Image (cartoon, rainbow, N blue to C red):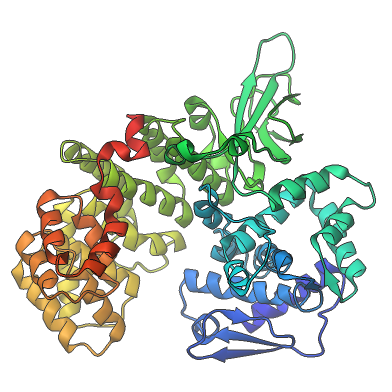
Length: 579
């Protein structure tokens, strides 16, 4: 951490054109402390973040590096210059989020390959997909408003706005504008208008103000529909059309104002420059109206077009199903691959792609070696399994999961492998559980049980995520003997983390008798609820769960909110309408 901090600090000083603005810099690791805080000259960290040790896995390294880079950037943005009021808190957090990616890429390029959790803009989508979201620059009237502003919109969407601006202006113009912003503020307080003015210099580009205004003062995320027209008589034409992205289930509640919402969007596309496809062209345009058409810088009709080059834009994009399928996955960066899978997911939820088309596109993306991409695919599959797939469709759905994931699980293995690729190590626990659960794979359940029983005989140190996956996979096809071992191990262990995992796994049995036993005790830890969600797919198990919840109205309300999508009529789910 010290070596990486030295590199990141030197990079930030060079990039920002000024030395670190305080006379000293110390780090303190604090037990029982959440996150980190950028106190000038003395940054405090949760000890769990900072003191990770040399054997830490790649995810812990990325977290530690990302948080450290974020706090270092705050020495300038937040400490040296400070927002005039809480409505511009994003000026602190957006800059720290945006710069953390740059700093980590300098210090540890291999860790920067994956999208950093601390700067992942897609974490803001869940809020921005709804009609009741929050603006980046929100009016602050109370302490509750202040607390609410420390969220994914301020951090992640704020950082994404700066990333989009840089993608539009270019790295050099962006760097010069940021340096002007720091010099103009001169260690004082700042407002958004000061940043905008600094970015407009020296060209006086008024489009920058329109860009900031539409993304700072409006909720929601745009969707760009892109299509290419090739008629042979001249250069190909690109047509872009914007609208507010909304999933199907929210559309009936939108107002006339929602439907009219528009953004000033810098759209940067990439496509092959000739028929050979060996070279590509990056082309940007300002989309301020509902639609616009521009001429592509090639004489031949491009074989493919990526509507978000570098995935710098904060928007979903929509292509035809064929247009999605023709995108060359081997030429996409991890960020671009993540943007693609999110755009496919968004198109399915908006009704622009049906389930068959969407699943066909997702199957192609199984080859992408990115943890984040696999996580999104898994979320979609679980959503389908929990909310759309009924008893009639489940055998075919399980067969599809086995066809997709058996080869991948065979490749990554069910136990740690020396010198395995980082993405394999991190995605292994989720992959196994998905194949055993949604894929209903008895062979995998038996294989994992053998490893788990050997561990129960000799509980050596093991990664907690892997252990949790083993416990739940083995429980899916378990008998009473294994259930007894779980109970005995939970009572005897002194490891509080293991006790927590055993508690959850005891609620993961698919045998009705074995599931009824822990439910009858009416003492469930937070680990039980996500495990019970899987039981709700099966009518016999669902009945047992609800019978067990009857004594407590509070628990019933909590469970009802968690399981509502699985218990309502299937036709209420937006994806089912796309069959």
